[in-house]
Image 1 (cartoon, rainbow, N blue to C red):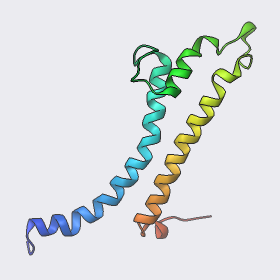
Image 2 (image 1 turned 180 degrees about the vertical axis):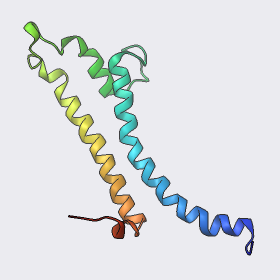
Image 3 (image 1 turned 90 degrees about the horizontal axis):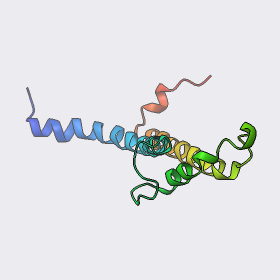
Image 4 (image 1 turned 135 degrees about the vertical axis):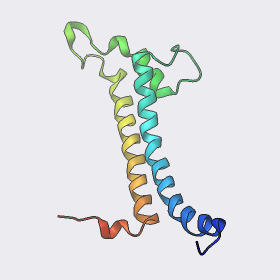
Length: 117
């Protein structure tokens, strides 16, 4: 009513929308890698030797038949899946922590909204 639409967009909407978008991008990176690895593990995304499949997915796909070892012991061939799984979990947690840190840095109102204790 009092300001031009471009002034409202560039002065109010974009500055308040950029920080949450950056935080969501940082948080979604870890989730997308975990989701893609899960799809590759169940065989939805393609062939094992495809160059489009990242290494973590390829290692889990190739070791899929060896996860349950002899007599149902899942820890018989632990080196096929455990290091990749731990790295994948740490990767996802790391990106989520980066997103939280960016949220605290780019959104100063977040400090007053959090109630500890």
